[in-house]
Length: 173
Ligand SMILES: CC(=O)SCCNC(=O)CCNC(=O)[C@H](O)C(C)(C)COP(=O)(O)OP(=O)(O)OC[C@H]1O[C@@H](n2cnc3c(N)ncnc32)[C@H](O)[C@@H]1OP(=O)(O)O
Image (tube, rainbow, N blue to C red; front, side, top):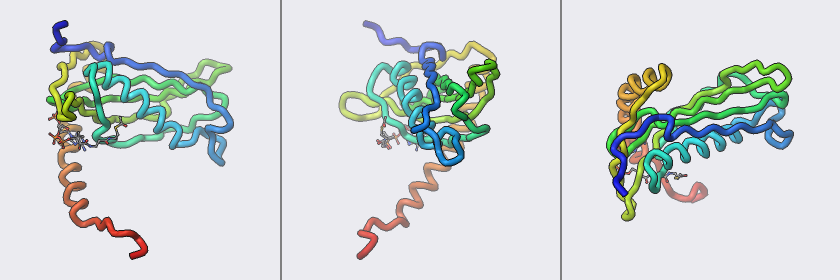
């Protein structure tokens, strides 16, 4: 089968909706941040796999911006898709919407950008299809992605420099 060289954002779209159960909440009775981060990594990794149709690893998460709390009366809906690619890397955008189940009111609760890298059978980075954005949101995110990739490159340099200065000895030695 011929490999696709271009894919629409919607081909990598993942939508996941969950209830907020008591075991998922913190002492403020809102969705525990770590729980939401695990949902985010989960959907984003599926978007990356749908786009590349191969092995992928998470290279980095830019940030998770918590904009408003998610409460037990809400459903939490995550949408993720690949917005832009470099050569082997894919930027995945995740938006998280809290919907009040009794009224249908929907609010943006959080956003996140993650980068995944596609790997070949030898574990080496491999080329992925280009992205074709279609909706206004996809086009806006695609057009602004190069700037974010540049910022990531700088951050990577800083973490590599930091790694040189971090000790790995046992903390008690
Ligand atoms: C799904 C999971 O849960 S995976 C578990 C968590 N993730 C991991 O364990 C990954 C650990 N890290 C790694 O394996 C490696 O560092 C890799 C695969 C991410 C990168 O491998 P390297 O040999 O450093 O590759 P290289 O420097 O050629 O970079 C490959 C691509 O990754 C991108 N990249 C590497 N590190 C980062 C980073 N921190 N942030 C964003 N992009 C990155 C590069 O820009 C490059 O993109 P391009 O091909 O589009 O130009």
